[in-house]
Length: 502
Image (cartoon, rainbow, N blue to C red):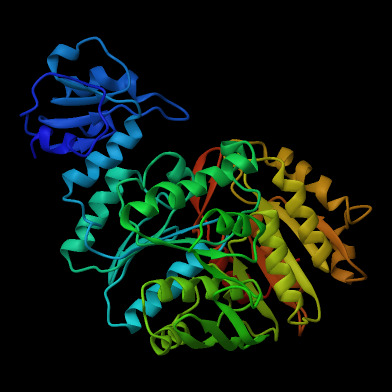
């Protein structure tokens, strides 16, 4: 594609060089550049792409998108822009023939619930005889085409290529999880959203956003800037305080919540170990819900999914049938079958609010005892560690703190932060013998995650409920030495087969 065609869609400050140059490919990694490609110099958290411009030119770059004039600019066509990430998003959309232009796109954003909502919508669209593609945390998929998801929302170039591939194979519509990082970094600015869903906002990623106001502002970008470009409609969970604030800022949005004042709200509701059942009022009529999802907080996810489907004018009967057929989401209260007459669940909850909500939902199911295994990630926001720990300790009979993804941080330092939260509830840490005796409520710290899971399984009694939280669908653990294979679900099955070790 000619550069001049691409630049019609990009905010440009200055062009130096030929406009009629043929762009054969686009990359933000100088190592991937081939002759005739365009290179985007991105400013990152760790490194600055402007330092790799000479390497990109040496590899044959014909065009360089940059925020600053560089030495050797006369060797290529230099496109100076105010924001390289924004320019890349718009250029990628143009280069891949705007693959989201003529299909409905649903973007789901918020701290919790995004993945579950995309799975629910996928089931609804399948029931409507559509062919949905999904870009999200667990994978990028269309039908049997499943691809790894290194990021919830990929870089704009990768996103547009991915969507273009799916579109060429017949995908329609597109469902996307849209992360706060992606919105802050303009990764989704080339997407034409028809529906934007806001789930909730609780403390998360504050190591990046620094405070809740900036976190909220990143989410607002989807609704203020991106959605109006396609006359899209907002669907907002007003059970959340930030959702109430957003709805007040967006007249005409479709609101969801338990309150009868919400556009979409339950008439009746029954939550049990069988799932969630009820009837929901919508502007399109009554939707019957018979979902296998567990937990009170999934009511909000179901209402948001109904809202997005209503915004796209799908019928109540189609929505009901789709929700009934939606299978459980990998790593979201995923059941592990066992012969202990106990309930064992794996969940992705990795923030204080998410863990509290999951535990509250499980306590409502009245287990004999609730055992919780959890850990906190390293090289991430330290402030959430005692919050998660306190949430686990307050709701659980037995709390087992362990490692999550320590990354390059000392696991003991992470666990010391965790102990601070556990200490708000319990005076001291149990010994293994005290945990085995099961007298009262308490906590124990077992740094090795495999051993922690083994010990939790060894404690199980009939009627107990064991929650292993934090990693969910992830099949790896990130250590200082690198990434290793580790899957909570596999570890639980192995421990069950071994009979549990003490």
